Length: 156
Image (cartoon, rainbow, N blue to C red; front, side, top):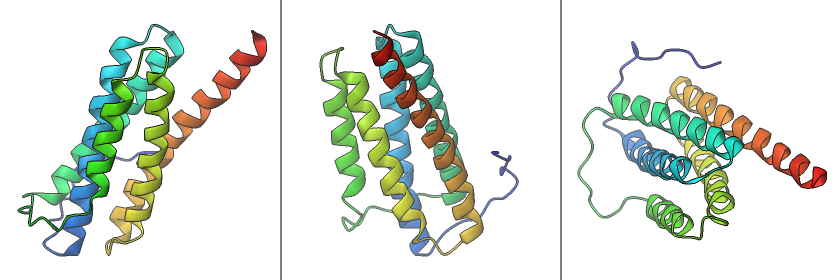
């Protein structure tokens, strides 16, 4: 489903660059939060899910960083959503081990939703489709984990 888009390098000096930087920020936060939680959880399913989601966020962040090229200077007018997401991930990670996985999962869903909204604002629709591919992969992993948790609760 995910193709190697490394050969396609486009610099975005226009309004797309700010959108991509916001997405990049959220992806880095998602990568670090999911990676950190992967090391904390004992459940094999949770460990696998957070490792996979972390990997997908990292790969998407690498693609975004590669395409943005030089990061624009922060003028103070960037979207506040990335800051909100960073705070939400930190709050989720600071929760007790019992609650942290569900809280991080909740933030992951918020990130997918927010990046999905930002993708619609991009001028480069081909690049937007590549981002949507990554979002779809993350969503599939989260959906599968949610289904497995429901089944596990019914079995208990």
